[in-house]
Image 1 (spheres, rainbow, N blue to C red):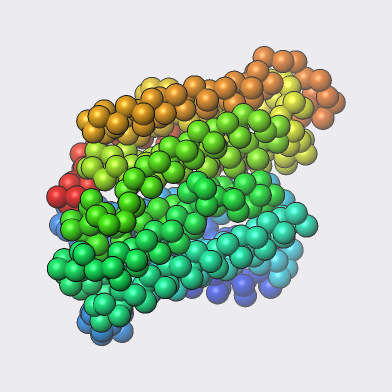
Image 2 (cartoon, one colour):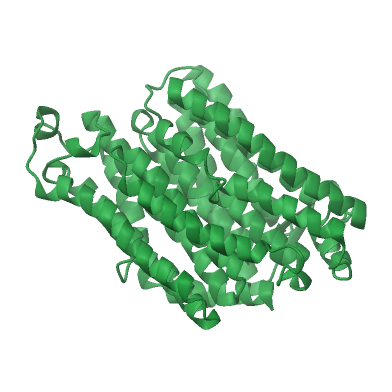
Amino acid sequence: MSQLPILPLLPMLFGSIIAVLAGMWRAKAAQVIAVIATGSALLFALTGLVIVTRDGPISYDLGGWPPPIGIEYVLDPLSAFMTSIVALIGLLVMIYPVDAAFDLRPRKGVPLYPLALLMLTGLMGVMLSGDLFHLFVFLEIYAIATYGLVSLGGDRATFAALRYLLLGTIGSGLYLLGVGFLYFSTGTLNMADMAQQLGGMSGSPTVLGAMALMVIGLALKMALFPLHVWLPDAHSYSTPGVAALLAAVQVKAGAYALVRILFDVFGPAYTGFDGVPVSAALVWFGLAGIVVGSVMAIRQTDIKRLLAYSTVAQLGYIGLGIGLATPLALVGALLHVLNHAVMKSGLFLVAGGIIQRTGLKAIPRFSGLGKRMPLTMTGFAIAALSMVGIPPLAGFWSKFYLVWATIDLGNWVAAVVVVGSSILTMVYFLKLFEQIFVREPQEEVVATAVEPSGRVVGTVGVLATAIVLIGLFNAAIVSQVLGPLAERMLG
């Protein structure tokens, strides 16, 4: 199984090419190719997760050229965990009806699925790459595909895509500049080789400057507050399926790269981040993002914009966990990557079902939807309650580990913010619950609405079930995957 590290990526890559040709022949054929590609990738990723959790990491030398000269793909518990999330969410979005996911009728030549598969290819590549420059290449691949996908949402989405392009280019440039500084200092781009050489260079201003540049660039890609300014428009103006991919997995690539580079490349000598206050910055900006994102979400009346600002808050939890830099905090951050992926994709896909059936986006007009779409709205309620942090749902446990980590460190400010943020989250979801479940239908379009199609209900149901199962079996995920992973990275 020496080729296993590259196998999750290949179905996406070849699928994106085949989907272009299939879409020219028959519109729906591209979606079939996308489902097959993402399903195959999920099978490879889950197989890899089982194997590397049991037997340890596997590496693959591209073209037979060994590192540090050649490009290395690495499948370890972290990359296998992340690629499994990407493939799962990608598969569900590909199964989702095209008119609800992309707000377009399928027709020949529309590049929806090729672009989506190309974006997923880039995300997979980021998570499997063992080479810093190769990681940059995949960052650009998924970014370019994302710009195209966001622009499909209309005129305002095109402007949002342009702003994201400009800011994303800045983030990529900062990251690449940092990689250049590290290459000048070490003479290598391979992560494992560089980690060995950086062990004796912890006081180098060049290395510290490189770390600062890379952290800022990746934080912009991750949309960590206050570098989140591109996210609300990109997520709220893009179509529901695109927004689900962006919120659930695309922004997590930056978080993954931060974890990988800070703890595996810079390593134990930089755990305290002496000379550059990276840890403190991630903690405080993470806390600020939690508060600002939650408050801004409360103020929104558009469902997709509310969910977009909610994502800003949820990314703050991940930034906080990375910044605290303890095994328990890292467990909380990585578990929240999984939890947020299933919760937020479910919420955006519910929004897509509402828009498909009613054309409504304004929350005050949702009165009575719970009676007209009971199955879909039950899935919505499960995801929303999990976002609040109601036990035993998935969202509770990642917050629990983060609060535990802050208490262990004596950081009571962070503990209060994490606990208090659940109240803020409850406020904006109670506003939705009142409209959906308490009020009677006020508009004809709601009074005559029916449950969305079976594929909408089915994908939302799968995600709602996943939220419950992750919550019930979170201890197995932590003990078998995330706990040993965090101990290794911070040991």
